[in-house]
Image (cartoon, rainbow, N blue to C red; front, side):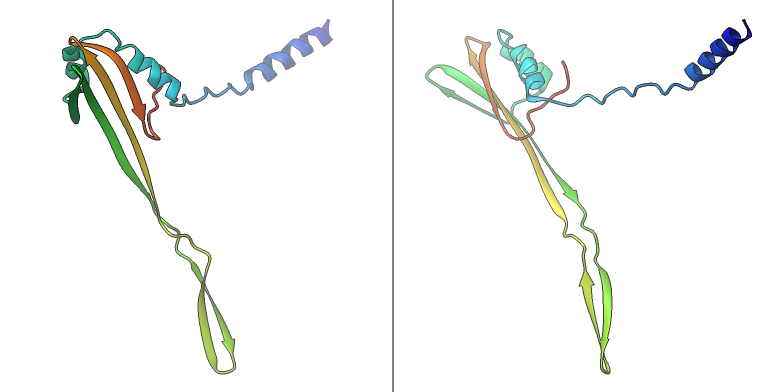
Length: 136
């Protein structure tokens, strides 16, 4: 009987030390973005503009209107300074940079164009490397 109590005690102690499983961080995807813009099919142009704001560009062709929303940004990643190594040859010291990286500029953009016929959204298209969203 004493062995059973010891076993239950050990299980209770070990159960209290369990590490919780971390919740994965959601990742934006193009599939989620498509779900969001798909949800606008059939909606009115006015409702889209109320939600998304004024478009950056609009044009008409063949009685169909197109309005475009453009989102773009740049991210600057700083470089790493090199370290320096000095060598002495004879009576002369030579110092040269070793390693390091230059800075990097990343551009992100997404242009979404809605096709509007008779005041209703009937189609869409997008292009760019940042047309992603979290689960709608």
